[in-house]
Amino acid sequence: MRLRYSDVTPEKLYLSRRELMAGAIALAAIGCDVGAEATAAPMPAGAPLKATPNAAYRVQDAPTKFDAATTYNNFYEFGVNKEDPARLGQTLKPRPWHVQVDGLCAKPKTFDIEEVLKVAPLEERIYSLRCVEAWSMVIPWIGYPLAALLKQVEPRPGAKYVEFTTLKDPEQFPGQKPGFFGGTLDWPYTEGLRLDEAMHPLTLLTVGMYGQVLPNQNGAPVRVVIPWKYGFKSAKSIVRIRLTDTEPKTAWNKAAPQEYGFYSNVNPKVDHPRWSQGTERRIGEFRRRTTLMFNGYADQVASLYTGMDLKKNY
Image 1 (cartoon, rainbow, N blue to C red):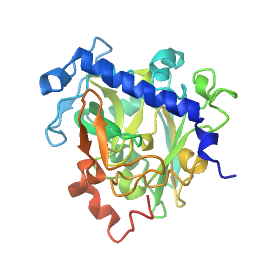
Image 2 (cartoon, helix red, strand yellow; image 1 turned 30 degrees about the horizontal axis):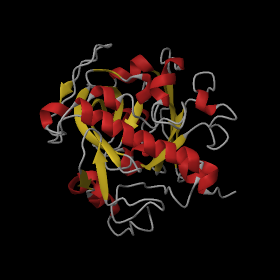
Image 3 (cartoon, rainbow, N blue to C red; image 1 turned 135 degrees about the vertical axis):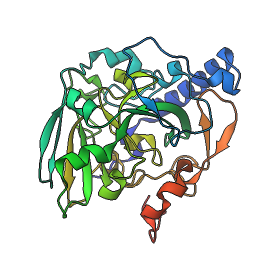
Image 4 (cartoon, helix red, strand yellow; image 1 turned 180 degrees about the vertical axis):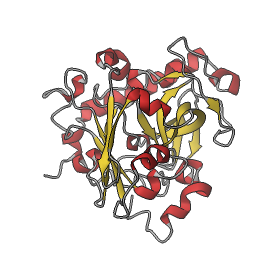
């Protein structure tokens, strides 16, 4: 069944989210100026996670404030409002945790989260993450290339795609309960990449941010970050990674295919049906920025899509 927008997000709720966004920007303005010093992220007091800064993966802009990056989130397993993940995130238990990696591979394996942490050296990368709703943040993520984990299981020649599945547990994720938001998305949340996208060195298997382990509301204990795609493409709280020869059915594409395509590349020339993608607002700033193709990573990833119609393959 094709869902209408009203089936996905009621108009009243959509408007309340817009009001919330405006309020968050106003609060940011009260607390700081828009200069680099004001937007620099303070080091939080949390469970530390050591990582080596990677100078090759840094944007010039100062990171978004930690408080903003951890309280203004899309994580629909906790609810549809931006403050819901921080408000309800304590229900998630990120230990113990296992990630099953299987499908078209020679050595399928289930990794304990501590094994995941040891697959490759952890590094800090500062990526800009853009939301389809035309806002963005700059976050110092901690992780390593997803390719390092995939190589552990040795993908078979027929593998063409990678499917990510997140935890399904309404007791830990209240947004999955019927009557809350659970009746709209087909839980568990699934996402997917082409194998070459997943193996690209920019694609980060992410276990921390701002010098600490991932907070629950940001996708603990493990997620992916694909900086040239919209943020909803970055599956959080992953429990399974499956190699397949078939394009995976992704959660938002199933719920609203007229709005969310499989590729979900940042393309300012393709507007969302309800708003322009040509500009964006960095959280903590007043002015709008011009949205860059592939979120500014065109030099690194444009070759992945040579010959493709990126308006048709949105």
